[in-house]
Length: 234
Length: 316
Image (cartoon, rainbow over all chains, first blue to last red; front, side):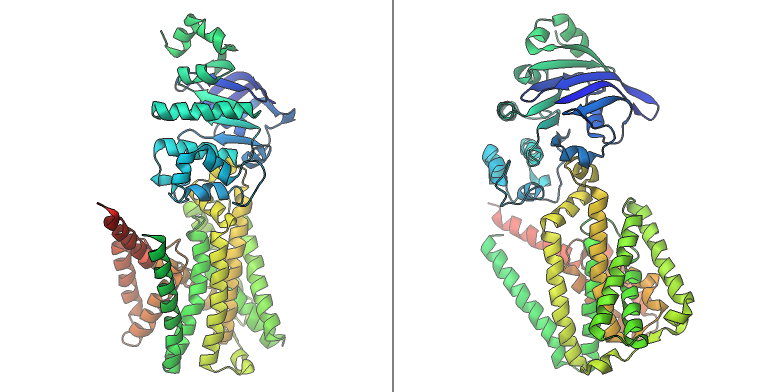
């Protein structure tokens, strides 16, 4: 489904991604793990063609179609959704407005307002609250719900568990796992190793813009040297 | 605030608005004329608010778009002897097309660049109106007999304008509260977020700019009938600034605040200019006071105060 090959991205003259390659298949959760500043968010932004960074070489394809030269809204129209880091909601819109902006409240196909609210009952209780009146966990739920409203085939999630209480992380992990069951591909960018290990089918480790390890979650767990070297986990 | 009290408040506000709109009919014709002007300029201010309040782009060219419509109505009706409804339609069309062109040029900029670009575009229109004397009459402007042709009294014209303004206001309210209007607010809050959700941000902004110009064009066409005269002063920068100030004084992003802003500025202008020639100074001072004590505008401040009261009532 998504195939990134030898991606080189720059912030000005800074060569941030130095040949990143990865794949995500339908119904698969792939985690991209790494410490701060290693290029995780840059990878996501490069896939969505959000400037900066600027992709200078490499290929990004989705169902065999090249995405490199498409604008972000055209990429989103190909059913790739982004859940950005820090949630980045619209502070002046209510929960329902966030969702109806993307699809009419009376829509019956794919993800609907009611289905998102049923998936996240907490949001249903807050349906008239504005983006800036929600707690961190509620914001994250809304950010995921908003992404689902475009009926994606692939969801790019940038550190969804960041700053959330453990109970919220657990709930979110349940939702992400259920999305996989429905056949969605998920690229999960994480710092939280345990969350990634619990969810991911395959894991890529990124270090200073290069993929330095690739394998299943079980393989990574069995490789304490890599965990310690690249994530600082003992 | 419960939904019941909110509905009651809305009904009361609607009734109060009806009384306010009907009140000038019981006054001398001078006041009816001022009230007509207030309604027309409220539409101009609302058209500015559609952009400034709902997309976060503050334009300084709406006076030029408004005035273009006025010019076209007066020229086609007076010089080309077209029927008034057709002339008004052409005026609105000209304003809409002009707004589309301005929009295509301006929407890729934001902040101070957008402000300056729209200011420059407005100045080009002013320069054309001033220099293209064969068509625009230059500084002498164009004078018509549109009101006489309609055979409407000042009061009848006021009622007609009030009906049109009510319809246009409803259309604008629907526009900003539609799913499309929500996307505009989304763009105001975060452009790249909207792009990553699948929205073509420049296209949406161009549509918003064009729609805003369409509404400004309706105000300009009404002004042609009301004023029966147009000159370069109608398209000059101060007209754009007046529209913007009315939107700001009433409350940017409130839409209906435009009526309050238009009332305050035009009523002050009329009242103070009859006493002193330095009415602009008084207007400036009033603007400063409003910006210090109610930077969110009169309606914005009222909403904040009501929300505060609602919250304090719900506290245990």
